[in-house]
Image (cartoon, rainbow, N blue to C red; front, side, top):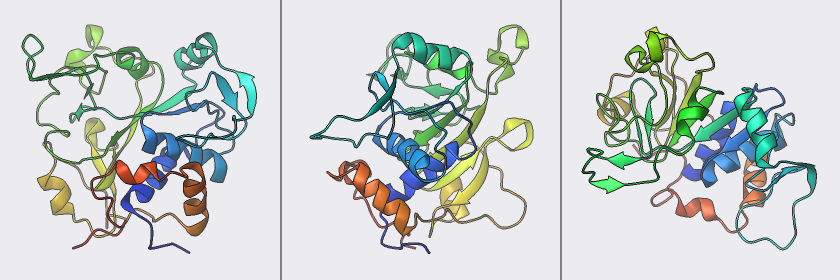
Length: 264
């Protein structure tokens, strides 16, 4: 049974959790609180195989709540940088990251907005995105679906590899390049279209195809048949989310945090 009292933030956490549904025993990394809560929800509800660190230097027996806490999480193993990178470079990690821009190739940007020589805004820099993108599967979280985030052409500065042969060394696809899903505040998409084109997987309740297309800077392919509706989190999932985020930090991360069912 679904719970229609869920907020949009809670719907997004549940949608993020789904990216790890069928993963084996490897490291699940969610960058920013909503993806992090999604990884924790996946481990606690349908995929206990996942390894979780939750920004600690330990592998955790159970995901840690976000925000202030009175007790320390129970560790089941040490997770220093060396062990983390062994998993990363060996392909045994699936990261759900939150870029500022993404394009039709799945190339992402967290570095600068505008020309790199004279940017309108300087951000984080490419950081680990280049190596991560060619070492293990990656998915993406875009909390504000719009043409500034899902851009026409290429992103302003390419920080991670995507399905653009013009950017591949010698025109050869990186061995472990695997882009899986894009979760936004309007829908879920993947790269299952022709030649890895971005394809609509599901629409959040009350969102239309036209709304997604109007707010996307590139063409989005449609699946065969009717477009499914993104599943609302059930009562059990909501209880887990609320236990993992006792201070309701999630409510501050989506503007206005409206109900999960989008007003028509």
